[in-house]
Length: 308
Image (cartoon, rainbow, N blue to C red; front, top):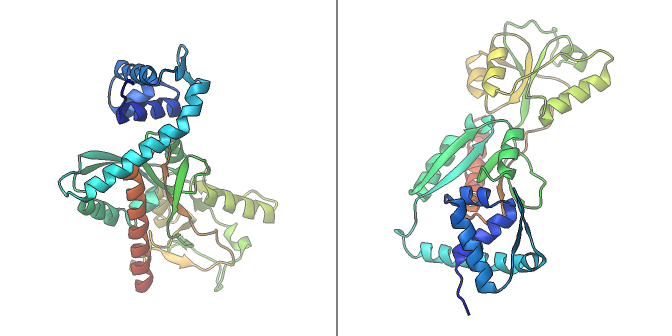
């Protein structure tokens, strides 16, 4: 019997996932010939052909398809063994990079707390951070260019695990300089008199606001979508219109009087975030980071709730 190793199994699963030797090589930080050698060695050890090679892609053979589930189980057992070994020795952790994508709302709230806790619990893990819109982060996660994404979720794909985060209530806010109708609570008709500053067009908050106002009135609402949360806040501070923003993000501005909360008869649903990561191939670091993010987010929400 010709022996094979875990590295070959991992390579087999990555090539099956990506459908590409090149992409598997990029994920493994190695060369395409090295990946080809590992697969050839595994095929020789197993005595069967695992992939059909084409010009730009590879496809599992029928034998490869049948061997995929047991290979996943073997890798899972190996990873559990590695985690158990790591827990026995504080010096056994190897340096790794967590490719983290976050929505801008997270940057303005509990991200600093999370990075501090991640550094304390995984001192040898470096973090590459990408801040972008949820639609972009979802695409990067699905393409395996991110290990973990904290975004407006969940990501409804069978290969993605979603860990729920505490929600962020949205409130209507405006500059004190903006002249509003003289009443305690604004109506939707009142809102229609002003430009409305919202999240980007591809987000749920924008869609919810647009369909609510467009369904109530014959005229088209004036909505200013912004992909940057900082830009939305800046426009609101400058008195351009009324914005729907997370309460936690504009706490300092409302406390200082730079912005004021506007009571309205309707407001969009709370922002729902998830820490999402790919479960195939398995990524134990991303899984632990997602769990840590949920803990940090809950602690932050509890702390902020006590101060409001």
